[in-house]
Every structure is written in C-alpha cells, then in structure tokens.
Image 1 (cartoon, rainbow over the protein chains, first blue to last red):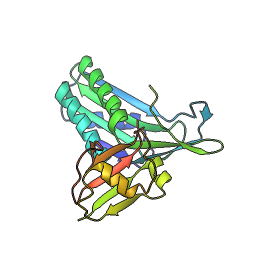
Image 2 (cartoon, rainbow over the protein chains, first blue to last red):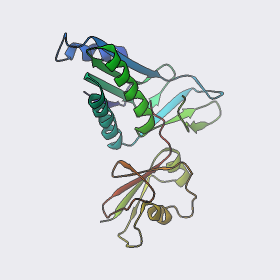
Image 3 (cartoon, chains in turn red, cyan):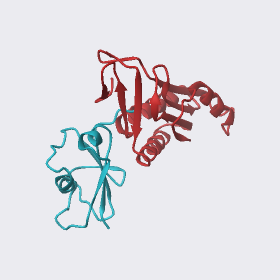
Length: 143
Length: 78
C-alpha cells in the first residue's frame, strides 16, 4: 500500500491504472474509490500563477503511512495508494492522488475519504502561492 | 547530545533560518523552554504546531537531549 512523495509531475489516472494492474488479488475487489486534488489558478480573491509545496521529509511519510494503517484497521481495505507532489506546480497539475480498493463500495468510499481528510489535517505539507504582485503562504485548508 | 530544532514554511522565513541547535542545558525542559531559547524574542505565532521526533506534541511536552523539535504553521497539503 504505497505512499509516495513525488518531486516531478505525475498523471494520477495512469498511476491508478498501473496500480490496479499490479494488484495481487485480481477479482477480489469490487470497488475502487479515489480522490485527485489539482492546483487551481484562483484562491481567495487572487489569481495564482504557480505554487511551491514544501514538506517535512520523514515526518510526511510516517504520518501518511499511519493514515493508511488507520484506514486498513477501520474498513475492509484490500489496497490503498497515496501520491503527493512537492516542489513547483502550475495550475492544472495534480497535487495529490489517494485511492482505496475494497470488496464493496461503502468501505472504499469511507477509506478514501479518511485518507484525504486526515492527510489534509495532519500531513506536514505547506503550500506557497505565487500571485501577480507577491508570494503568500496558504494559511488554512478550503472546506 | 544537543537538541536539534527545525522550522518550516512561513515560520522559517519569519525567523530567517531553517534550524538551530541547543547545547544540553538543564534549564531547557519543555518545548516551551526550547522556543524561549531559540525564539530570540520573536513572538511565536498563535497557531504554531510542534513535533518532537516527527510526532505531534504540545508546548508542555518534555524534551530530551538528542530530540529533534520542529515548529511549523498549520499544514495545508492535499
């Protein structure tokens, strides 16, 4: 159940397809739920031309792995995947992919939601936005 | 063994450095003591979070020689 921090751009849909092909127990899962977060070009009344994502190496991976372990302990998760960018991003680029595989949809949806909500609450990433006239740090998550 | 201190994101920019080291000192017992030592009079932003050895902790938490103490703003990943 990999957790990956990526310095380079990635395509979440290719990653999902690649991961599904490699799943050890084909035919065991009936449900795949995923969330993709993408960088937007507008945030809180300002146009954003670029973003830099910083993280705390070591702590990030540790807490993402713990979040996956919680999902496995709470729901019937057959597999899970988290990929998160760091470094420089442009609008339209994916920031994060989380996915969960399960026999049935209730567990897949619930686990997927847990992965992204806990990531946004606990994983030590920070976003810095480039606006027209200055750079600013994002200070809180959107709902 | 000293205590290694690290700062991230806007707090790092505000302080103008990424980290500090504190020599062993019996007067430095808690995270709050660490900040008193390294903050150099800078007010600590109200919403600053703390981790000790990469686990979230409170300002009252005790620190030991060899610990890594990180101060950072609320996280905004995802």
